[in-house]
Amino acid sequence: MKRIVVTGGAGFIGSCYVRYALKTYPELHVITVDKLTYAGNLDNLKEVDQKRHTFVKADIADAAAMEKAMEGCDAVVNFAADSHVDRSIMEASDFIATNVRGVHNILEAAKKLGTARILLVSTDEVYGSIEKGSFKETDALNPRNPYSASKAGGELLGMSYFHTFNSPVIVTRGSNTYGPFQYPEKVMPLFITNAIDDQPLPLYGDGKNVRDWLFVEDHARGIDHALRHGAPGNIYNIAGENERENVVLTHRILKEVGKGTDLIKPVKDRVGHDRRYSIDSHKLKALGWEPKMNWDEGVALTAKWYKDNEWWWRPIKDGSFKEYYKRQYEDREKA
Ligand code: NAD
Ligand code: TYD
Image 1 (cartoon, rainbow, N blue to C red):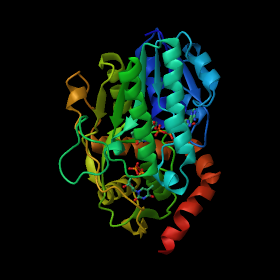
Image 2 (image 1 turned 45 degrees about the vertical axis):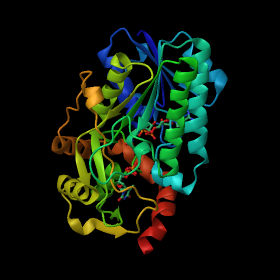
Image 3 (image 1 turned 120 degrees about the vertical axis):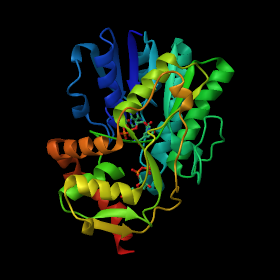
Image 4 (image 1 turned 90 degrees about the vertical axis):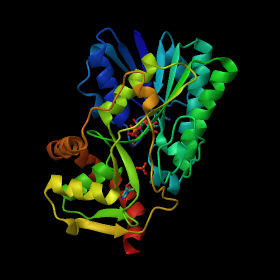
């Protein structure tokens, strides 16, 4: 592969992927296409070799822009999405526009141009909640919030293009991802930055919901592995193999930031809150990928990054995020 388009490359996982791909493949040219929504940030791409990187500000739902960006490319890797469950509960229309219609538009552009690989980055949330055991790629989908339903819609469209038009679509379903450059609406960076500022950590419900934590570089590597070694028409789970109750995660963060448990503030639960996510990634492991980051080290490294990089997150938290935070947490805290 010489030239690839990465959509959503100014976001958290997408930017890690761009950094990883340019570092790993010296001949590669990456074209990042990103709309720069509230979650997109060009600071995330500061350290990439700009001689082999082109940035295009565009919406994946813009057919002409996508066709132009994808022309002459060997692959498109789609990270672009509205990605936060709580926001999808507030208002889901952007989620449908990007995660379903936007993906459809990429599939159409790829069909027209004959793009050799289309990788759609999806999520373990499409399976829904599981009490015991772990979901395999062959299990039925049961998305239970507007975000995960929109992601399921996008990937189902992708698979339908494989079956109907022979489009070379590969889907990955990753676990909850953490690491540097994650927008502070998600639990890990929210709790780390709140703890740094001695602000309460709003823990939903009984705090016993379980998430599987995957370090961002392991996720980026897994996506790249599926892109290069996976087969079209296939789906690959990417697990971190680090399942933790939210309350355990919260204690671990507090310990790392050096703050007391008095900061934990139990608040009203998320509506429709999935209890546990768990996936089995033997299929991708059989192709030679495995997660490398150890949990304790990953949390320590992530907390340190937020401590050392206030220049990155403080303007976000002092800006429009404040309004969102008030809307999202004010009533919850009263409950
Ligand atoms: P993010 O919210 O940090 O970044 C999303 C990026 O997409 C931003 O740069 C944003 O500007 C861009 N974008 C949004 N709408 C767009 C549009 N219409 N056109 C062009 N660009 C647009 O998200 P993330 O956490 O990096 O997630 C990346 C992908 O990985 C998403 O598809 C998400 O569903 C998936 N995923 C995320 C996680 C996780 O824990 N964060 C886990 C599994 C899968
Ligand atoms: P989140 O980071 O939003 O990811 P997702 O909903 O996609 O799994 O949330 C991770 C877990 O943390 C989830 O069980 C909800 C919980 N959570 C809180 O307890 N408090 C918070 O303020 C947030 C944002 C999440």
